[in-house]
Length: 257
Image (cartoon, rainbow, N blue to C red; front, side, top):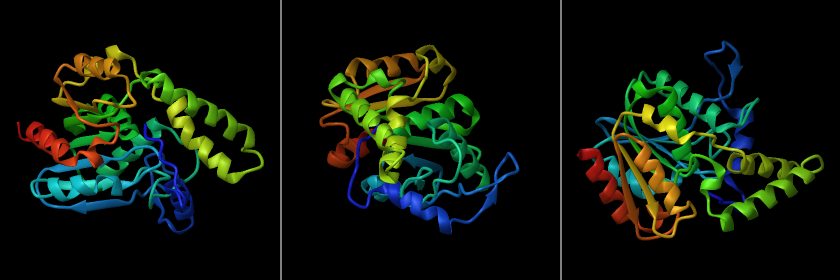
């Protein structure tokens, strides 16, 4: 669950994209703006990359270049992030998981490896629980099962910011947007540890040695996954960007194993 707010932030770009986004008919039969933007490169077995909260597919620039030498890499902008539209209705991790299924179905992809970072890892978990036949391998970087999996020093400021932006939302569109994004971290995910036994595919759980996720929580996720492996990489929550060489090597060894 990445906290990454910037000038010209990604969530504003996603909201602005709504007006020009193409329509397609979802599984409920209603016209909805949920065609997701994707950076696509390489050939081979599919590998989908899911970024964190408030970011977009550019977070994985080092991974796209490396992994596309062996895989068909698709780095997706989540709904309301980057160049993907926000659309209407709920803005939740579970809905993002449904968007991912629509994305794969539209391309005729019935099995893929998933690599998710932070909230992207949480989306990957929810997707694997709901649609296990679609997932061949799972890489979870900095994921958590519930908000208290974050260190208190990280979670408390997020909770305070969420409360403040909630109070300002009626008079500030910017505060309302920020409140919606922060809500993904304050209120979600809600995954029970014993649910992880349903995920039978090989799974690599990665975190930084100084991650914002509690190390005990990360270890628990790995231990509850039947095919789980744990890897701690020198660095913070953003090891894929800040220690990309070690991160990429660890992931490739897992994918090729």
